[in-house]
Image 1 (tube, one colour):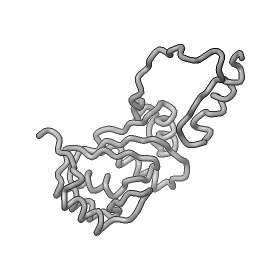
Image 2: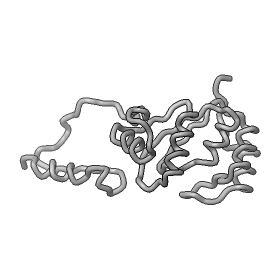
Image 3: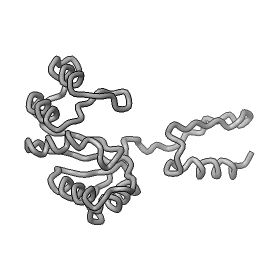
Length: 171
């Protein structure tokens, strides 16, 4: 088949994760290079898709997949400053070997390029899958305006702009 899915009931997957892993945000993952190599050899994925919330995330998996010549797609969600010159060199070398490096927004893509020392325009943008739809007028004009936001409270999320915009709405 064109795409082999890793199934949660695969005994090898579960055994590897439990034997070689440790808890990271509630999930057990193998963190060392050789266990990742063994895991990927056994599972034989057609592509490794790495969601990165740190520039240094998933390194054993990415390096193992590249060593096995498995195409890798890096998806950056949030980039932070702080890489050493060696870290930026690793980012450049790894990015060159990957099938693609994308970010979930234009700002995220430019941040990855800046913090990782990548050439401008080298990280493509693929927005998260939220369709653009026309807003519906469903608000009860007699009742209060109720709004909800889901996400971390961080200046990057722009909740301050949302609150400022709400304050400017007529009563």
